[in-house]
Amino acid sequence: MDQIRRDFRLSNSGLKAVQQASEKQEQMNDSSFIAATQPSISRYSLLSRRVGVSVFFILHGLCFASWASRIPTIQEQLQLNEAALGTILFALPVGFFVSLPFSGWLIARLHSKKVVLLSSTCYSLSLIGIGVATTGVQIAVSLLLFGFFANMLNISMNTQAVAIEQAYGKRLLASFHGLWSLAGFAGAATGAWMISHNIDPFWHFVCIACVFVPGLAFATRFLSPGDRTTKEKQSLLALPDKSLLGLGLIAFCSMMVEGAMFDWSGVYMSKVVQATRDHAAMGYSAFMIAMTTMRFMADAIAARFGLRRTLQLSGSLATTGLLLAVVSPQFAPALIAFALVGMGVSAVVPMVYSAAGQSTNMAPGIAITAVSSLGFMGFLIGPPSIGFIAAAATLRGSFIALMFMAIAVVLFSTLQRFPADRR
Figure 1 (cartoon, rainbow, N blue to C red):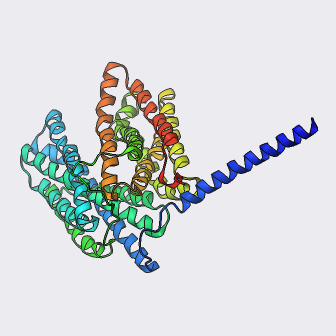
Figure 2: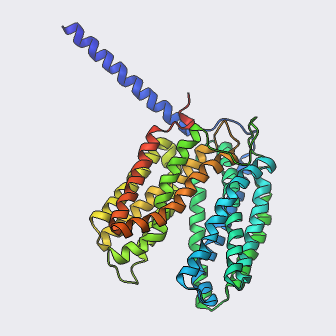
């Protein structure tokens, strides 16, 4: 009997040792998650490339926030009612969606460096086009082009960021997205200053475009000259394979929550929490500040705990925040709740893009496009879904539906097989 007990303890200890070794190996795989696919380059060249890519993330965020900050001014100038404005604004996501297949295909053909140069130039010019427009139709056409080139730049600069990760051998993508968020704050502040000084949107947008020119000229020469390629022929409409489908579903669920928070956090604070008009925007501010801050921490967290656990933590934080907002709709708890949601969604998209960029079946640009397509559908579906559910039930009920999307992030992350897990 004693011998049996000793054998059992030994076998149990052996099992624990195997489990610990497996967890350690997974963390080691994740910390060195990128194969040495790029030639050895100097530390100075690595830093230069990182700075170059960072500039484009900053310019992208600055440009997009500049447009968003002048929407009320443009509505007033063109005397648009809410219905007309909503119809015109729909041209922006249409432009995003139309660009998806072209972006990945063009990156695979020309390489991301050339597409970054092309799309960033057209992106800044299309911003000026919005300022030039004097009718609703002209605004809609300009927004369609603005969305088209905004998303093309988004995918191509994320492809460049994945190449930087490969060269460094560590996670960096979330910090790039953090720079985008910081630039968004700067763009919104610049817009507020322009409005307070009664500066026309056209001249505002010309100033932003002028910032683009030296930034583009400086940063383009530091970009990675080529992208990793695959032997498979890339078609214009690339569908995600089995491994990318799981990543796309994670992005879909997270971006559905994110899109809903962008459009409905202020409404929730006003109608459910019953915050004053001056305080209603603080829920959105708490969400954005937490999301931006967490993006600068997410890379280190993923390096320490692994991609799977980071995404599981992200979904859990978003779930907790949404649950708190529903069960305790008071001002202080709601601010904490929206901050938790911001922390939860902050790392998901950059981490999913990073994993997609390691695909062995598709070129990075195509893979990121395929995952982005599913994620962007969630971003589009989220806001109107909240409105439909709120109309059928209550706004609090619609946030419960969002909570299930956050739970799905945890579940899909648990089931997904990430590139670093392949042994």
